[in-house]
Image (tube, rainbow, N blue to C red; front, top):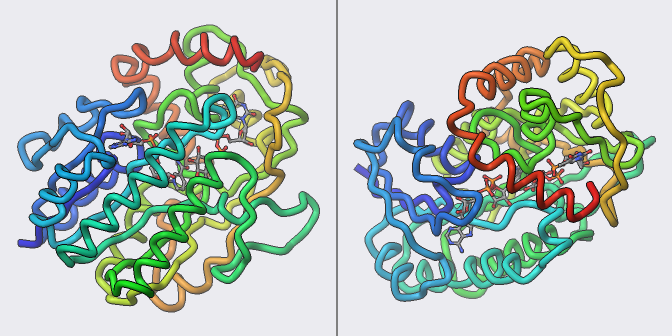
Amino acid sequence: MLRMLVTGGAGFIGANFVQYTVRHHAEYRVRVLDALTYAGDRVTLRSVADQIEFIEGDICDRGLVDRLVAEADVVVHFAAESHVDNSLHDPEPFIRSNVLGTYSLLEAVRRHGGRFHHISTDEVFGDLPLDAVEKFTEDTPYDPSSPYSASKASSDMLVRAWVRSFGVAATLSNCANNYGPYQHVEKFIPRQITNVLVGERPKLYGTGENIREWTHVDDHNAAVHLILTKDRIGETYLIGSGDERTNREILDLILELMDQDPDAYDHVPDRPGHDLRYASDTTKIRTELGWKPVYGDFRAGLAATIAWYRNNEWWWKPQKDSVEAKYKLLGR
Ligand code: NAD
Ligand code: DAU
């Protein structure tokens, strides 16, 4: 059995990764390290609680990280502050967790060895014009727009430097927007679904013309497992479904699937510095590793996600009021 340490395993993508690993990869014994910030909840792991070990702790705690990394063969690093709007309001936790936290993990891997996979985002590349066909590639220069994406870009750079200068056995992946179960209700898709469910009007930033490339969380996690099976140390892979949609299109679809009037939403002030379009050329992971998304039908994936939020109010309801109170303060 390989010993796997998953940081941020109580958050959206990390918890889905842990569940996916328990279901499909019996070769790993999973240990989760998570600080249980506002975005992490142990209850998200309750279906696999007997099959994993959970440790509540901070990736910036150098002593704890040193011990846990020494006891792991593979580290998959999801832990981060992840929400752009929060980073615009208070950047400091982003610098701490995303930059210093990654540094602390890298130093431990440098001391003890083992395989490290760093989870990152397409936002490190900045944005693309709305009307272009151009896409990000692994060679696109970094040009982050928000404190969140700048902190993720910094962490990617640290990983690359630790590979080159210290021989750390790391790989990186930069994924597009994820959707699926257990996503925090601060994020676009769950916010709109749960707004409808509680009788609030959905909120669209600006014109709603901004484009994102929506990728099912299990497709992202399958790609990460594929990268782990290959020893292409130092390599970066872009991950994305290729399914680009405007926010307005997504909202229209949510309203339709939830039997709402097409005009039953509010336009709210735009996010400062709002990135226009993200789109990734994923030729490398498709041709080198043979990855392709299983969730090809976005409409069906979104309908399943809506059904999940309908049936799991116990999971998201406790977060909802405080999230909306925070948005109210931001005027969004
Ligand atoms: P999330 O906010 O839902 O979860 C983050 C988790 O990390 C939480 O459980 C939180 O408690 C934990 N955490 C935060 N700071 C920590 C610290 N200092 N020590 C230990 N644990 C800490 O985030 P997510 O959406 O699941 O994103 C996970 C990773 O994937 C992040 O690195 C993010 O940048 C990246 N990513 C996200 C998306 C997306 O669409 N959500 C897309 C591409 C990449
Ligand atoms: O691209 C990958 C990134 O995707 C990840 O790195 C981030 O962690 C993740 O949060 C996500 O970032 P975005 O900023 O794209 O996601 P968010 O869900 O916050 O917003 C998606 C789009 O919807 C964005 O254009 C802003 C818009 N939006 C968002 C909210 C919360 C709205 O129009 N209304 C809203 O209420």
